Image 1 (cartoon, rainbow, N blue to C red):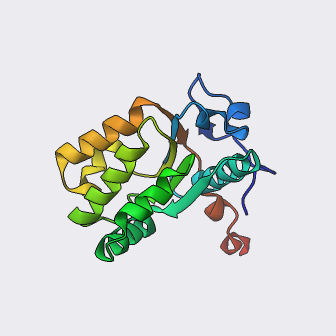
Image 2: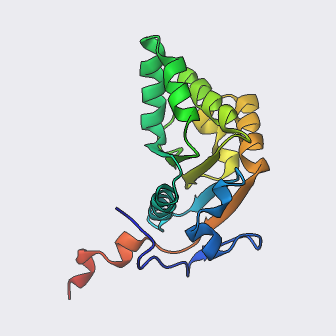
Length: 181
């Protein structure tokens, strides 16, 4: 499990309104605010999202963590089985929904609509963390529908902090392959 132990914030740009301590305390959840963790692959976005999720759990919050493609697949399966409302109700009980690897896998139209429903249901009701390496202008390539993409971005950014991850991939920096003479 990824925690804050040893986590470095050196190469993350935080907005002025958000401090490292507020992140470590998961304080934004009580305010139903969101985090969008944007930046290069391997820069610690998933680690930070996980650490925040663990801290939120330690503080009595209910957290659901999904790879975004997995969430969409589960939503589609629930819909096919006639259990979508039950699954959405389970999601609605979370104080924090973490959608990791947002945009890594393109979604079909039905999956996009289901994910839009989840994000719409979260709006001003619970917090969301999204990890992504895609800028907003490219999200239409995931969701295909410009209006739905614009509406989703509108709901997400209204109460969100954008954290920028500028560094080099941790995995590449610490690769065993670098040890060759």
